[in-house]
Length: 451
Image (cartoon, rainbow, N blue to C red; front, side):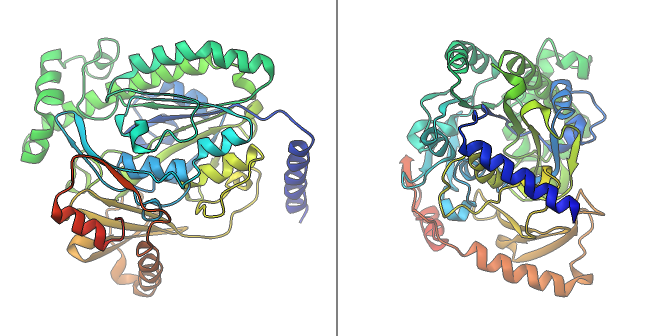
């Protein structure tokens, strides 16, 4: 009872501080594309490839079971920015070819993004992205005062852009004005490159030519041809190259943290948009299913003054929870349609209402998946194959043992809840930018309610 009273006191005190004009914290989100949770030392990775993120985690709250709302970038980041699941924003499709985007759905301007909400409450907002899916033409720049998006590039242009905008952030800091910074690193995403400073630390036997031959030039073709299943040594080589890319992104994270104005009083969050399969569940990439290797992501939250440092939280949470959480901390008015929950009570020692989390992916007609994640169990529905699977996340984090036959009643309840959710139509229909979609794809999206 005393613990609950103390928790309520902290919430009331925080609300009063916002009301009396307390300084709003700077908010920084660093997203490292394609970073599996189990690739991070703070999540148990035995290979020391994320030393800067691990050091930050020691000063932070670490969410051990954070879920992405989708297993590829476009729907996942759109959900992060809107605070709703993919079926509610409708941005679930993009076609990429020859290193460029042929077409992509565009977020409706009727949504009020996280950046817009923070801007309205006094934040100057910055976005730097190495992932071109976030280009302003696709609607994801809504609310950013400063926005720079590169064409699927490595970390160097991102780091240079941060250095260019740093003086403006410093001026804001000197005036006591808050800023919101979103940084999106792309390095761990395929194709994989050789890094002189990092790849030899992972595997000194890899040569730059091998990296080019197997990690870059023919990587996508090799995936589709199944070569890595036939040649396990090449799968290991690819994983080592991935580790080198993760080390490069982590190095940039460390430099960014050192350069941030007023880091001690800032709220810094490090996340991923999805993971990568590397052969788990007979999948080599992402976006094709919703197993834990692609849906579970790191979520590290460094609070001002390193409050609650060293806390580990087991409660499943979603990336869509960041919008309501950050907006509430900033004292902003929240859109009524948000589907995420404020997770600040979890690090204050309280609880959130028991709920179900959801995910989906649809890259083509053969790979339509939905997920329902409860406190302990996770239901998967492979729509294309009309197959359900159930996993006990507490005992089977890698989802190897389908327990649906021994938990039929529970699975039936999860199926009913998931069926109701996945049939929702978008709150505001998206547009399309680029080449016209095929009639077949347009028909499929229409049947699912996304057009």
